[in-house]
Each structure stands twice: as structure tokens, then as C-alpha cells.
Image 1 (cartoon, rainbow, N blue to C red):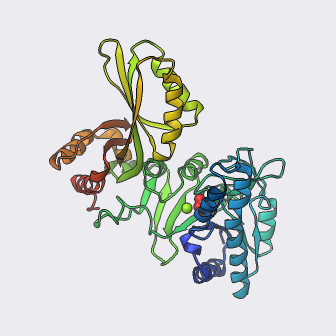
Image 2 (cartoon, rainbow, N blue to C red):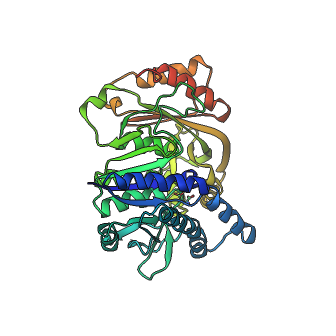
Length: 405
Ligand code: ASP
Ligand code: MG
């Protein structure tokens, strides 16, 4: 007798047969004696199609209307899933985000969850019903529909698991769990049985697209353990949870590559207090997330500043920086698009040395040039040429023996 939250992503509900498959899995979980709350995404491709259709009409569509539009994707899926369950004689009822009591702030397209009133959900479950909730959406205090940012169904699932005090939260997807590297690039990558929130967070924000980073953060904050697994078989997946001491024995746990990066070089900045602050304040005002940062030693009173941003943010970043450079004579900004960020991650790094040396030597042996470096307690990232990204991933995976358990 447990309360289980199951989230099914876009590919898992991609067509009618897959929705039937989900209904069968949900039925089996319920027949095993569990209360089941299901969170679903839009069918794969639907959200992207709606975004591009809107963009053919207007280059900068209104954000409230985008939320109205995109939430349609998940609403199709909840109703179809409920109908599929009815066909299997399972009592089931669908709920939009608002109907499920998910209250958010007013930031359309990237709203934050403020609270969840789980009364109705618990009532429905107590009546023996399976409840199917639309992921990625909520409503603000004025009753306007909002969305939680791309990939937001993961966050819906974790937040609902917290709200109804679920015993288990399962994120079903099209991969078997979290791997030591992308198996399409590194054929001998291994699925990990367990990983810490910290590691998962670093991997998720370093280009491993298994899960939305905000969802991992939320789970971490509320101490919800969750499992990432495939909806296409019954193999166990990867458990994401808090740290245990033995986890420090493994130094590097995984390699992630983010190919969606650009490097920005601001040159000729006056070497006086406040120059760097000006640049980064402008970026912050434009809502640009900056990742790796290097400031060169100044020569003749001028310094160069190099940093990375996500490829989608480049034009906003350039605009923001150019705006303030006008007031700083002879400074210029240059964008270099073809770079990738490779990161090695592991909580064991806190207590082991020599990781950077192994990483840099592996890259050197393959003649891969390092352009930028950044580190945290449990991660080392390097910016490299985009062309070399896959090869780099393979040699680094090998250098840390990640193919061996
Ligand atoms: N359908 C939304 C998206 O594609 C939310 C999700 O799938 O998690 O971003
Ligand atoms: Mg997703």
C-alpha cells in the first residue's frame, strides 16, 4: 500500500499505442495495491510544433498566449490517458494543473510553483481513482494559466509527490536511467544504479538532458528520492537520492557534454574597478546565465573578458554587452559559436586529488585544445571545439575507467 507518482514523458505517450502501454503500466501498479497519481507530458513533438507555428505568426509571441497555447499539448494527453484507463476498467480522472491545485507566480512561460493544494487529489485517490495531472502547467492567483519552463513536467511530478507525500516518485522516459556518458556517443557507457542529487544536478545542467535541472533542485530541497527509468521495459533505473559515505569512493561518476554553448569575448575593457561588474550587471538585467568566466591579465590598462553562455542566449547577451560597451571606448565584443562544454562530475572529487590532471592529460593525448576551465567542488568543466566534443567524451570516459563498475 503505497502512494506512487509516475511521470511519463513525451516519447512515452508519443502515440495511441504508447498511451495504451502507459495505461497498462498504471493499471498494473494500481493492481499491486498502490494509489497512483500520473503526470504526463505533451506527446513528443507537439510542444515544439506549437512553438514554431506561433513563431510563424509573430517573431516574439505574447507570453500569456504562449502559455494558453502550449498547455493544450498536455491537456490532450491527460484526457487520452484517462480514456485509455477507462477502456481497461480502471477508474481514472484527469486534472489540468490548475484543477490539481498547482498555484504559481505570474511569470508566464517560466513560472515558479508557490504552493500546491493537494486536497482534491488526495480525495480522488481515496476514492480509488487514478488521477492524471497535466505536467508543465499551473495557474496564478488570478486564475491565469502559466507554464513552468520547457521540460517542466518533471518539476510538476516532483512537486506533486511532495504535496501528496508520495512514497515513491518514478520518472518514466525513453532511456533506462542516468548513464556515465551519452550511450549514443560512448558505446560502453554504463547505467548507474544510484546517483546523488548534487551529481544529478551537475549532470542535468551540464548537458545531460535526462531531466529538468529545476526538478532535481526541488527534489533535493524537499528530500524526495526519485527513480528515472524506461517506460518501454521493466528494468530498474537510476535512483536519485541524498549522499551516503560510500559514494565518495567513486571519484568521477559521469561525463556530460553540452553542445549548446557559445563563447563571448569582450576585449579592451579598461582595467579599473567596476568594468567587469558593468558587463555582468548588463547580462543579469538581460536575464542571461553566464557559466565559465576568465579574465586575462591586463596589458596597457586593457583587459579581456571571456565567458560562455547558452547558444540560445547569444543574441540577448551580445545586445546587453554592446549596450554598455558604447560607453566604454575601444572595447569590442565577439561571439564564437562552435564550442562545447565537457564536464566530469562526482562527489568523490571532494576527497580525491589528481582529477584535473587526468582530465587534461587525456585531452592532451588526443590533441584536444582546452579553451576555458571552470571548477566546482564536484565538477570540472572545459570548453573545447565543438568538432572534438564526441571524441573528447570517449577519451575522458576511458581515462576515468567509467566503463568498469
Ligand atoms: N511539453 C513540455 C515541453 O516539451 C513540458 C515537458 O515535456 O516536460 O517542454
Ligand atoms: Mg521531458
